[in-house]
Length: 144
Image (cartoon, rainbow, N blue to C red; front, top):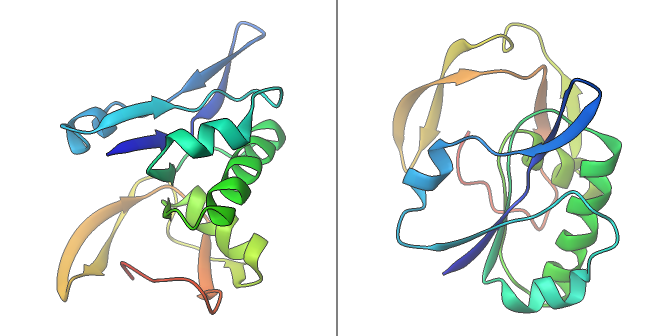
């Protein structure tokens, strides 16, 4: 599959850099990965035509990143192509589509907690202060 991966924007010495967490390369080994640049001047229709799926990754939110992710996600939805939201991506999609997101305590700074996936529990780290109260009615929840 050809999978698009959104990227966070990191600032270093007054310059903006697109960034992706390196474990994605191993996790999606065998697939063709397209790292989506945080640029609003790209052809989102053409990019959506070329992708089989989009993953809106976790990480820090920014206005530029959000605009890019939502423009591409809109084009993917028009084409009925799958979109997976991880952490930031899940919160962004839920909020945008009309689900309910709220703040939580005790889930930031690498705190470990359980996640249920395919009826099995996994211990994962957490770096966010949000949680999904109610997903949008069209969402498919993969893990809780």
